[in-house]
Amino acid sequence: MAGIGPAPKDPSRRARRNKGPTPQTILRFERAEAPALPTFEIEVDGDLVEFAWPARTVEWWDMWRASPQAEHFGSTDWDFLLDTALIHAKYWRGDLSLAAELRLRVAKHGATMEDRARLRMAFAEADEADGGKGSSGAVAARERYAKLRVVGPDSPDTGH
Image (tube, rainbow, N blue to C red; front, side, top):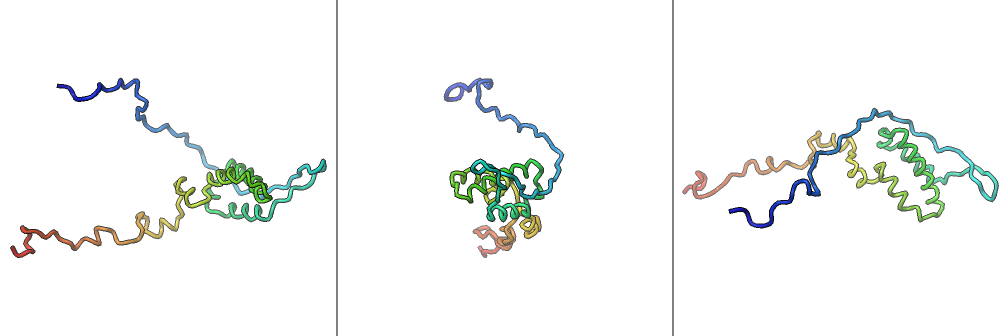
């Protein structure tokens, strides 16, 4: 007698086929030096004036240039971050409508602990602290319970 329930769906009509992962394209990495914030002119009331970066954006840019993530940035990463600096400058000048875009852009570079976890970034000190074992440093369960023994009616330790 056959199993209970409807007949299985034809494999060609299934939505998920659990195919293997899409092959990756391996690129040659070329580290790029962090550029300085550029000087340029903008039009104000019909006149060209030099754009002045807000002090907070200059500090933010220097922070990114010195960050551990920066050693993994290529030229396109720096270009994207430079465009993000303009958004940062407008945000710090009061255009709060740019907050969401700014947050999304810095997340792509690993700005917060959550972003770095999502991007699978870890600081080297974290690996060195536990000797590369990936543990919290606490005593392992096998070590904590190594001296425990099963005690029961058939155990030689019970005296029965």
